Image (cartoon, rainbow, N blue to C red; front, side, top):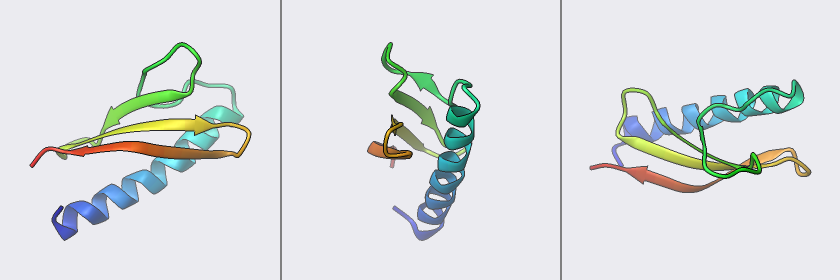
Length: 73
């Protein structure tokens, strides 16, 4: 992955963690498309970039995990 895209991806993930945390705290729907009925797995793409992310919300640990990151080269 090119350095510039790597930086954009890292910055996006940081902002995503903050946004997801805020949504969970307020009882709102987190960003992205739900991948399950339990509200744990979501998918979204980085706007304007060839990257798709799937993330999981770990409510008890107050964290998100990104098990899938796809870069279309």
